[in-house]
Length: 210
Length: 210
DNA sequence: ATTTTTTTTAATCAAATGATTAAAATATTT
DNA sequence: AAATATTTTAATCATTTGATTAAAAAAAAT
Image (cartoon, chains in turn brown, red, blue, purple):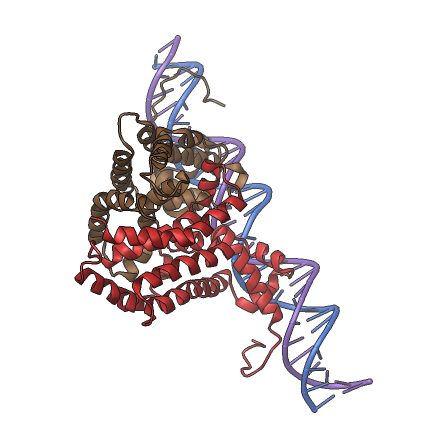
């Protein structure tokens, strides 16, 4: 109640510090397994301060979730809607940019998808920026390729799913990959780097498959 | 303490009922978000009974987790190690069997992967039946194909990852798919059924890609 | 310098939650 | 049928955990 005075350039470092800590903990452990005390400790502040700034665990979570999803979708929509680049180029960009992105933030995919899984309190529907994807240049170009016989499978969603799957799944399953394959972090990163070049080649091959 | 009398064919229905309920709730919500009371209610029994039979939430969870992972890996190793079938046939079988499997139990992949993510208390290492995969006939056949020039990418793990990704990822991302694509459950199932045939075709095309 | 506002904290609360206990109900054995 | 063992429950405990409060410390305004 001492806050909302508006137009007041408050020193935002503490608030940011808490948000950053919340991001780290939420992304690593998920909402349910996260204790607000964990976040406070990670931020190096007292628990009450967290509630002072963000009122509740849920509100803080919603902020983090929204920013995370937006960060993830943003690059996507930009690439998908670029009218200059071909479909093949878009595939390259998505593979390359997202592998880099997820290498920096490996917890994001499993975090997002596991939080969305039971869609508690309609979290998904409140997410913005998601709908435009269907009407993107990417999908129009796909349609065009299908019409010209350059792509066998006509469902653009199968195509998009495949691209996402090849790009993101390895990160979601990385604990398993590292265990089964006896792969360490360095090797894993190297494999993912290789996939930046491999995925476009694979996708191109799949397009003409029948 | 009245239990462990050994060699006593006790009526196992209550125990099974609790386990089944635990499976339902754990798979849907994950360990941290699950309340033992939820499980008791789902099983139609009292909370104390759950602890009487299984001592603790964690012990019950470990049982469910172990059975789930085993169920998931079992089919895999059987297919991967069959010496009669070709590599192509194995790809078909894995795609087909796993899509059927996950259509019946759509929560299993995200459950397994999200629980494994921070590998608390070395859950992963205690999982059996995982190591043999690397030495399976599948990988030997892959090596053979590489030697004969039938497969471009030499790393068998990339190959295996791709197969898993194309098969499983759609289920993990189904909330997103249904939202972005405006796809309902029936349509989703249909898409996945189509993938049973499509994935082998795609994989075959990817094998020769360069 | 004094007053006012903002920031931070320690202490505490209340609800949720995993677990236990002791006794009642039911089944089994004798 | 009586005695014994097993199964089930209601009530309760202790800890965890999200949240609040009131007061101290720090910063800003006057």
